[in-house]
Amino acid sequence: MRDYAKNRPEHTGKYIGENDLFLEIFHGQGGPGQSGRAPLLFVHGAFTGSWMWSKYIPHFISAGWSSYCINLRGHYKSRSVDFTKILFEDYLEDIRLVISEIVEECGAPPIVIGFSMGGILSQKLAENVEIAGLVLIDSSICKEVHAEVPYRDLALRMPGLVVPAPARDEQISADETREDIEFQRKYLSMESAKAFSAFSFHFGAEGISIEGEKITCPSLVICAVNDESDEHRGRATARHIGGEYLGLPGATHTGLLVGQRYDKAVSRIMVWLARFDGR
Image (cartoon, rainbow, N blue to C red; front, side, top):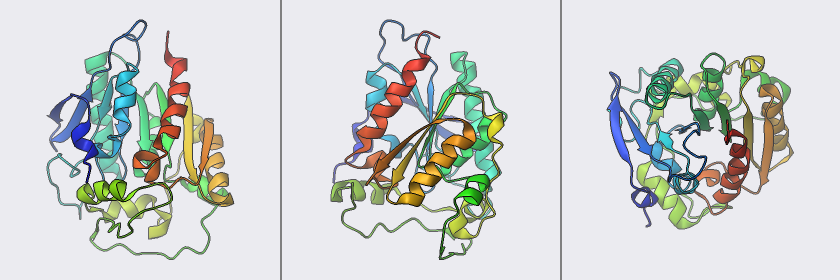
């Protein structure tokens, strides 16, 4: 198995806050006009950590973007916590703390890139925390989008005290090789049931309400599209926050980050990021 996390560019890491959140820092390769760029903050999804961005990071570093990868409390190399007690709001507080750390270090708020659970967390933060931009990659949807384009025929899974890591028993997916899946299987871990119960409609949640009009920064929504409803939900999310939209047919949820076509999402983000040059 190829461990993509061990092939990432040289970087530093530090623990911050009372929960010892492990923050990884990748310094962009310098070039003309790049010193004034906003930093990027990557926010992972459920069950994962900064390792999930292993294929993405080299592209942004090579293009000169300094990048910070958070590990929410209890995830990857952050200190272990009691997941039976962790709330959605606790993860929000983790991201607020890291944004404050970045602003203090860089003198400017970051562009936040959130995946899945990290996407709904990032939307909620963007209502009242200053950020330079927002990118959502197959984000968990908000209450308002679900009301417009609801999931149909949900087979509700009521969580126990914690949600176990996905088994990923399959050998391949539509856009992931055996190696891609084995990489994830190595690192996937349990997740907070209370956090899931706040935002996941598959776990019976009422959903997280997002006041889209409060999100005033430039935004981009990227979605894996496998049917018409995926497309509608993605476009509805983009409309709700006033953002641009890209749907990628045939992509899978995790494949957008670690699959064989992940570069399609990276390329679109790079084009979108060009607006921040020269600011």
